[in-house]
Image 1 (cartoon, rainbow, N blue to C red):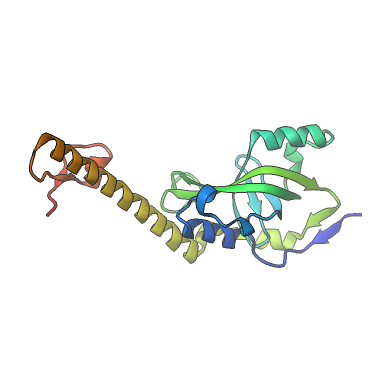
Image 2: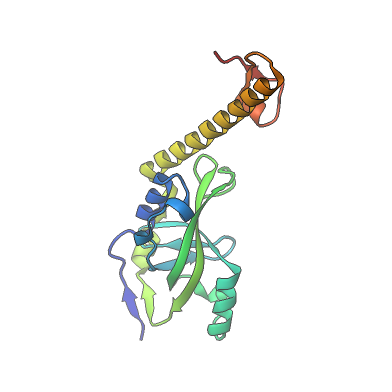
Length: 199
């Protein structure tokens, strides 16, 4: 008879918060002491994958290698049978993605953090607490995560504007032209005749 597993503390929110605080750079800036294995629940697997830590849920992405490893080692289980089951995630990473917030649930301001599962194994002798998994909330409804996403979006746009402005200055210097106009955000993403004068 399987035992019921109760989640004691949040796991997804602190790592996503730290990920956004380090500039959404998992490979270079994310501290290695936070890259520990964790138990999660696969709360949805059709039409999109979501994992839950008993408090919050977030979109997930299983790598092809992890699914192939699962099929090889647990051939008696189907991937679709993992819904509402515990998994032990041994290797994972976080990725910042752009998604349309009007069409996707786990997004804010057209940005989302995807939990990428690189290696996992199912836990068949335990079941998650149904009360905890049903009361879990969308991670992107949290005001702190929303603020961090807005800051990340702002930093990205600021870096994009500075890079475009530097390339315009370098072009002006090489051509011997005076100070030029810096394109507006609309100009950066398409309509190039829309410009704003910078002083």
